[in-house]
Length: 344
Image (cartoon, rainbow, N blue to C red; front, side):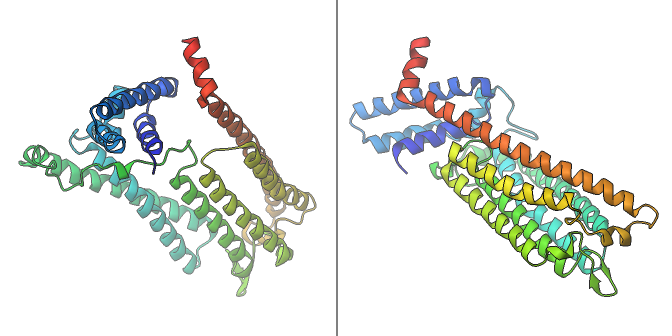
């Protein structure tokens, strides 16, 4: 990583939780302060690279610095281990809860449960696991915070705690909201689940009759309709990776996003209007005969509205993000910075 990357990553980490209306001013002030300290060290003969790392290390954990900017207490059960507790808790929730929900859903499927039971079981199970993770993790830190030698360990050597000392390598990659690693992983996981569900629906079925699958989607969509859907899902996955690597929205990416949204929405709506998207036999099987036709009709209407709403929002959201990204890029250019200084 070069010098600019290191400073930018530190400023991003220290200001990402600052209210948006104050964030740019705080970031500019912090960056100027860091530059001044580096220049002072360099003027005394210290190597520029070494000076930069020393200044950032002296500033310390950017999360703790951010708490000062936001004027908010950085503790829940005590200030000493707050950030270690918060980082570990987020990591456990990201890993443990999805795995637990997937395991519960898989167990329900193997036991032959219906779609509603699978969804309800996975949701309730995930919430229960999340509650346990939060409770037990917090309890451990509460005990650690109040242990007799906690203060002595905190003041000794490299702070003497069982947690590694903060280093510059822990600085996050500066990205706008929605473009982080967690967002990429969530998108890929969601797309993977969607692909598996589409194939499962046709080959295994969420409901079976006489050992034959009864898919929710029209069985006539197999194999070419489902293959087209899988191609779109793969394209969306590639787009998510490209967007993550680009680090910002551009108009080219917004247009690509709109094309992908329309490529899904247009055929889906056409099939829905022709009565060829959903499987009427599925509703006849799971809904009482006297109301299955009405439920099918209502479901079709809700599905159509959802397709239009999701696609429309996706297109508008991508365009707005590209427009905001362009404005930010323009304001961060040398001419933009000169204009802001002149205005001030």
